Image (cartoon, rainbow, N blue to C red; front, top):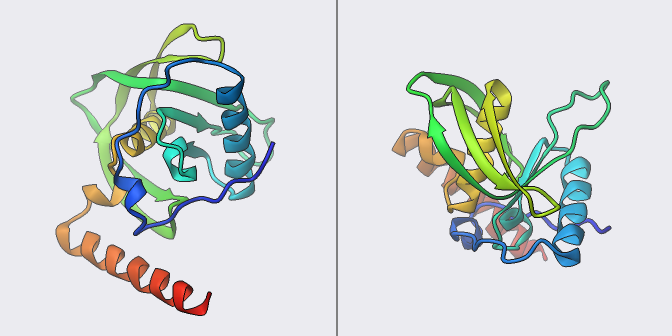
Length: 173
């Protein structure tokens, strides 16, 4: 297992559409282990492979609270089969947009099909935080960020702030 660097806004790789995983194999399992280690270290509750620079359709999630046992979940090639007409609003953040949080409205419930680490097809119906996180991470696989749901003004202010920070870091390096 290894910690990987989480790419941050304005890195253009965050806008890539990730490719489907062709085989559930040892390389994929190593990637998933690294993703969990990276996500827990950050700390975060969800991570898409593209956030560690790997443009593959893989998501890791763990919604367990700090005082609960870990509950790691893996979604390979996830696809949303159904979204509810009813919406819900949750405060979202992103490891690729650190320390920025905003209310985002999304469908309240979703049904997602994915592969597990044995290569078996699974389906899950989710609501609440799980539904929000699944949609947030699947968006990453499609090059979409949670800030894309904000007003144009808010989104441009966030992008400007992170672009300035990246320039400062580059100058200091």
